[in-house]
Length: 223
Image 1: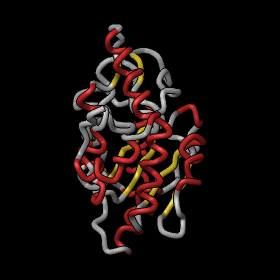
Image 2: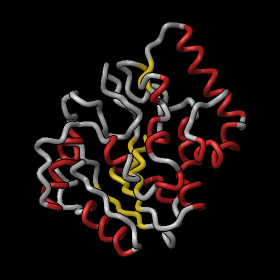
Image 3: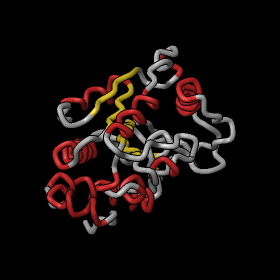
């Protein structure tokens, strides 16, 4: 498969693209598309997180699980929705925590997190595609083998990255990360289903303090 992906990522991940599982994954996606199945996000946005945050620019990783499966929501960035789309419940809670943690006015910020991505926040979903209307429908195609390799590549080849792991699924990826070289922050998932357990984690101020202490520009979470 001739993967269209930002050059720095293609260089560090080429060995994954060459593996048999990735060929099977690509073939499965092509089959579904040929059958008329609607897949989110659109093909040009599947690797959007990689396009907006080159490998050497990654300062923070926020790991999601599955793309949004309703029309017009998925844009290849975890937790993000395109400009003008109503805020999903989890993102509302993320914004509330940012306000409570840092005192930032988030009331005018829409649901697109492109501004974070361009500052070095790598918004990675563990599964990069989904069938329309069918949550987790591509969870067995091989995406997790690929994104596990992405996480491990960041851990092995970069230093001083902040990994934000929210919820049990994301926290299960901690074993892929060298905690002696990176900061790993864990919390409940921001979904309302977690009963508000996410609130008070203060991950956004902790992230910025760590970046500042490592002579890196903090993230402006209001952008």
